[in-house]
Length: 489
Image (cartoon, rainbow, N blue to C red):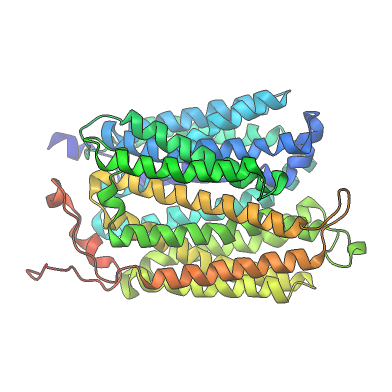
């Protein structure tokens, strides 16, 4: 009991987690608008500089579930500090990079930071009062999504005022301070999952994720019908099947396949995949659309900074409505909030498809996107965390974040292929390419809303050896607000 009375107030933990997630989210997207600047600064080619983004995505995809699993096993606070240390080192290496090779290595190390999200969700569930969990998860999830958009907004002013190296110096300083604060402020979680890391599972997971994201990321350059891309995608499917087979029979799986089959988990993961397709494709290509010279017959010829400001309402409203997601979920249920957010999100892509001739129309679309995605991201994260036993929180939320990343890679690659289809080297894309791309994202948003309808409205308490520790109020807050088979209360 002495341990419990010595534990610090959860508000201090909350502040540190918010800063950690914010710093990580900024590093996700700061480089996207300034890849041409980095290309010139490091004297490399356009194809090579894209690895600054691809290497990060690959690394984050691999390390997110691994760090979540290690946190469940050895302590979430301990692994959070290690994750923040890796982010700090990677940012330092990127800031001092004078070659593309060192920059890519630095981005791989930064990818370890993907563990920030599952570890943060796990700490919230373990440490916070039951009635605060839903709202806290909503805010952290919204901060992660809004931070990714804010990185695109801040990139231009930082490069204009300083240089691209400060895209890494500033996050490095912030994350280093947060890492020290995490060590001294955040109490170690008492919820653990005994076991060991499944190395066959790690290797197979890494292999199919690398094959999938590499194939998708390079498809616009190599061609979707090229032998290399087809070979990578087929390899990804084959290895993924082998991974599922190995994990299902492992005594200590990296990701419990029984957990992944929980209706609330797999349906929410499907929504995450489809939502990632739309959100990250917009972040990647809308600035390019805005910066296109008016001589092309579309676009506005604005600067990097100006295009970032047009996207700013998305981040502001995403964070604001993400904060509202928790109270709304308590009142109406997380599923209702998720479906509502996705329906609003459809309007965003419809506006971009049919109404993009004036800057105010783009601004309106960004406001709508912020409202819809803020509600959707926050409620989606809460659904996953509440649906699994406490000892599996890290790996479950980590895989959900991972699937969003995969969806983002798919969306960006497909959007790139559509926008550049039939465009000769050295010429600008046609307006119809962007319109068709946004139309496809509209279809993905509609599919996400349909998938959300199948998210269970009533959750059955997950079977677990630690079932007695399951926060009852959290389960009651889920969509529908009832527990199947629990009539005692």
